[in-house]
Length: 274
Ligand SMILES: C[S@@+](CC[C@H](N)C(=O)[O-])C[C@H]1O[C@@H](n2cnc3c(N)ncnc32)[C@H](O)[C@@H]1O
Image (cartoon, rainbow, N blue to C red; front, side, top):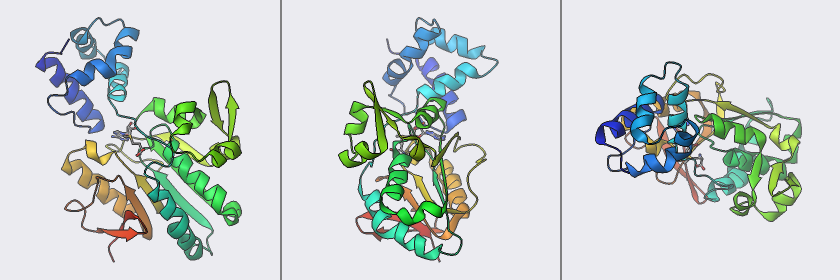
């Protein structure tokens, strides 16, 4: 059943206030799709019953669950491939030269979903740059969704997930099979610090001088004012020679002029304008 516009508006506002995600008008059907499991768990027969429960949700726990359930967590290992190729061929070799004295790299993935993106970064470093073994690699991976952050920490993926983009050689070398699933081996898991973080709130725990930022396929959900605020903060945290990756349809153009686009190999990324 399609929810009434008042119920849809209530949930739309709740999601936007908390996460900055804009649910478009006309996407009412999404509520049923994304909230069905949650409604069953909470004994709500339909969306009006859920909205009624939300209105008296003093602790905020149910509201939080609803917001998380409304996020789109689509991701895959080595998604779009080229950013990881550029990382391997250009960016990491360059940063290894530039950071030879301090031997530290600070990397942040700002909307990492279930962790496949940041593990793709970690696997690239481990597989191709043995010289980094004695460096301090500070790799922080954050997402709004508690469930997704926990999935990243667990490092457990289904056959379907590992079949989408993960090279067989990396699967064999860095994963362990358990029943139907595959686990990222502990020494790769230990490379990444997974935390909850709302991009629309305070950014505690994000390294204050970043060499590489992945923030892909999340700005698309926000309105321009929010994108501007986030990109300004990324600019301030990015080192002068650091790199930002956005999703294929995302840009800093007309949003943050202090970041400029650079074409590296077959990837577009962003740097501080000098
Ligand atoms: C489509 S996924 C993209 C995942 C990954 N970056 C990629 O490109 O494969 C978008 C992610 O952004 C997260 N997200 C949405 N709003 C957020 C917010 N306000 N703060 C942090 N993460 C958010 C969602 O939970 C979801 O996991």
